[in-house]
Image (cartoon, rainbow, N blue to C red):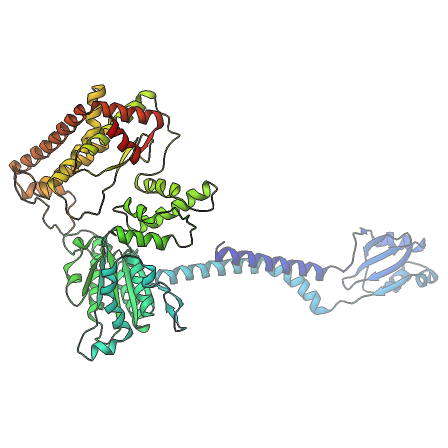
Length: 615
């Protein structure tokens, strides 16, 4: 319910109360419903000695009580008293004396109020309605001009020294990223003991840019810095600077930095910096101009810091390539800290952190889980542990086991199982041979990653999957490894062609992945013998090119583009022929794996290795 609705309800309730009071004032208390009779009729009843009491009100209204207990109402005639009026009607004095006559004169002020309130009620209602409309319009006007106020949110907890504004998160809550923590320790020292550095002529760093893929802990790390330094933490997303009106972004930047200076020492954290920090250049439209103004204001504010101003700007982005060079020069973001995806040891530490508060059995091996999750970010690992806890509750268990953790890995990677999906026996058979083809090629090629699981159960968009996990983290890849990966991708298509002499749409995802990888081998990694060690990456277009392929055409000749297409096709054909040759040499293994998949739908690593040895 909005504030306006509450005000309307209160106003109507007040008017209803006033109306009720006016009725109570204007009417006699404790009156029952009475019959109204002419005065002549009242006189007849008095003469018949049927009237016991008469009450005269200030407005000449008569209320008479009959001997049978009922009441009647009438109205006095003339300005004489009731006794004189009855005598004028020849009512015997003896009968008049038998009647208890009571004359009540009402207060003039009460009578005035009783008349005034019903008259003023419609007027007050109209005036109140227009007053609410005025207040609503005034509120909208104030909101309109408050757009320029800072949208930065201050994270307020109780600090270790009892003052508000500090953050609870500490470095112990951030697993892994050892090198990043070491770099940020200097920032913490600057915030805690700035004099130690200024006495040596050192300048406090203006900004720290955290670079890394999504979910690797950039925001958490920034909070941990504020928590370790015990300083206020102002958090805002880059997109929150932008608003309906031009100039609002720059105004919000000014407001945020003014607020931060009043709370110094403190940290300003701008998440998704690339949303406002893109290269300034050949953009079109007011939105682009507004972003440029906002970026310019950030640059001005960071330049305007005094040497002794203990305000440090931290920012996070996963697109450092699109940032304006003015942001990255010394004096703006002095420190650039890259946060990579965690390795095995870091993943194990993160799993331990995310396992806090979750009951695990003694059989749970987090090291094994870490080995099976290469390429997972910290956010992925947190999601993995949460999915395992949900699956445990669904299975009515009280502790998390490996039986919940391992399926959760596949759910994070590929999506949930779709066991309810109805497919024909022929489709299931094609899927089984397709996945068996992937697995056979991956097992045969030494450069390929080992097979951990093969399944024909649909997950996400895939009708089946072959789970391959590297034995260790790799940071450099050889051409042989890439060619093995291409051959494994073509293994499913080759198996379909050999077994059914037909192609299906099930290989579309494999072809898309293989084509993208082959093009990278030619245009990015320089692994084509024909074209040579040349990179055909697009030149810097300030991030504004809407048609990158047209840009590529304008930079390179048609002959070069034709050679690129030829080499991509050659890589794919070579991989397909290699996969087909391997499968033709191991047809018995192909049949064995496919039959096992049709029988039990899923084959784990140990069982798959046994099948390969026995076939």
